[in-house]
Image (cartoon, rainbow, N blue to C red; front, side, top):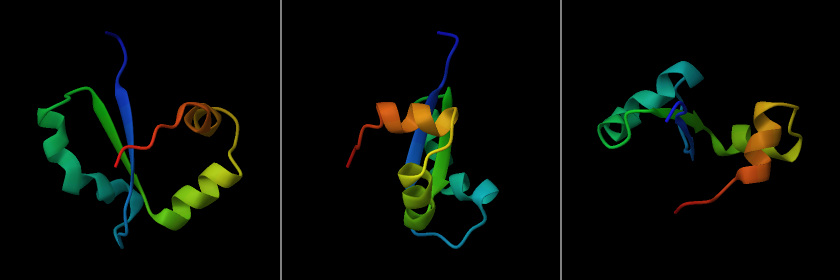
Length: 67
């Protein structure tokens, strides 16, 4: 109840990171406590093949692919 859902989307985009989630704001109508994080395929590959401590360690440990 005191947490949110982090939804990581991998998509081709030329937008800077802070603006990428705007295309997916409609998802907040479904899940209000949602953090939408949009990465390019290259960003995501780099972050998940050499993950840092903290957030990315947690992500790679609990990652679930949804198509």
